[in-house]
Length: 307
Image: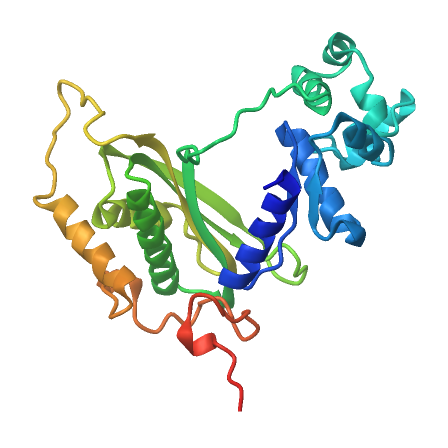
């Protein structure tokens, strides 16, 4: 099987199994593969699959590709390159890597080398561990009371802690932020954030919830209509990788890991939901979802019905 046939097989399999139309780009480097995929989308004659392993085909595509379409270049950097007479991807590929490094950066030098078939960017077989987890939404209805905002922050904190457990990580730092709308000139504007930390890194929703509400009370101001709020977890640690201080008062909740595992299992089963009372029942502030796209591939109720 040729690479072109292999790409067509991938395209057909994804369409059949998932129902999505995709394009496939094949090349010896990530940057060239990005260009191949771009060409597969742009030119219908390719049939959605471009094999760019041939040096001759690489040269032809680079010659008709604007330098701003190269992965990692962008408009601002593209303007600087165009002033130097570098208008196409081929122009960039023909530049001396050392000159590009001295005039711009080592990142752009790697791009030049990648355009010439020299692989400089490793493939990530596993996604890198996250350094931060944020959970934030604009409210469907303005929040004016501390009680409602406490429910929203508790909800976001629970979701962030759940994501943290999915990453098999613990976190020590938590940031809470709130803000009013920046677009209504007739209303007073206010935004603020506060950051706190646990004595020991944790993934327990209860630990973060207590800290989140303490931080919220610190930044809450009456008399404003808040349009958005959220939380961010940071300062991650692997399990049992944190060494507490000599005088730290270490007291962990008993069976915390097992309890959170059971909570996640129930919530992800689709059979029911378990949540903290602080998260509230009504949640009238939730984001409006009247125009939410149906989840055809993951929810039975959203499957189209044919009479």
